[in-house]
Length: 96
Image 1 (cartoon, one colour):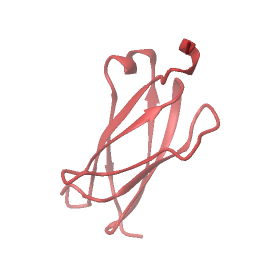
Image 2 (image 1 turned 45 degrees about the horizontal axis):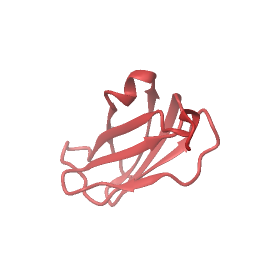
Image 3 (image 1 turned 90 degrees about the vertical axis):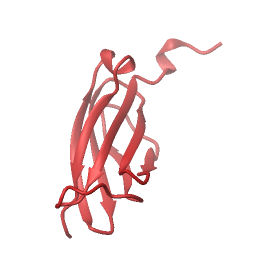
Image 4 (image 1 turned 30 degrees about the horizontal axis):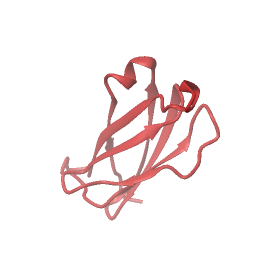
């Protein structure tokens, strides 16, 4: 039997784009900070630059994105409503 406290708080979905606004396929997106200690939670963007990450708890998360065209960070808030409607974030990569 699994307790509800171990259930994920929500999903963070987003799109990674380059400075020109084009989607970035194959970028690595990882949670680097959050309200609880985090295991290695990461995803690779699909052909349209989209990704989805499971957030283990409510709170503010920091995302780090890395692709061939640069890096970026973003912050997103996961709330109880995120379980029904995932948090959406757009990340723009900048040359490093």
